Image (cartoon, rainbow, N blue to C red):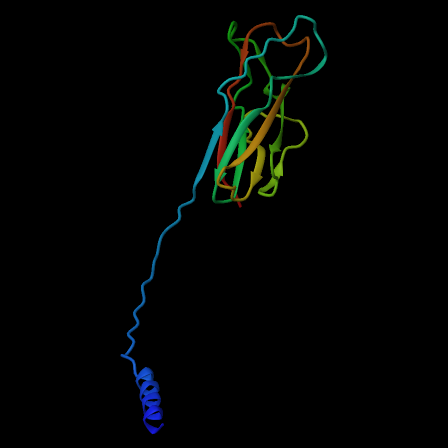
Length: 172
């Protein structure tokens, strides 16, 4: 019995003795750059207005889909730097303010702080905010931009063109 107790005490004593532990640390540093991307589902909208004049706004095709991916707060704007220019006669123009837009989201709105829910006219040379938001999900945020044109009989006949410049920039 004494021998068994001795063995048990010896085992317990040996268990408590372990080699010295040495610790060292490793720090992992990395820079996560600001990432932003924008995709627009088309490069052009072509509209054929009917010969039957109707006062009021005319919707221009289906909404344009803009996909935003960002890990920082962002703002999406569009700018018309000129009026509509007549391709047939350079002297004819139509004010860009006759083009209106609004935006809505396709999917969750949790990463968006602002969107243009009511139609708003473009102002020449002014960046118009389409939407503003926070970091997006990995699959991006899908914004639908709807356009309409307000025409009147004072607009000269012809084929017109207006380039819009979309910009995605960091926002506060």
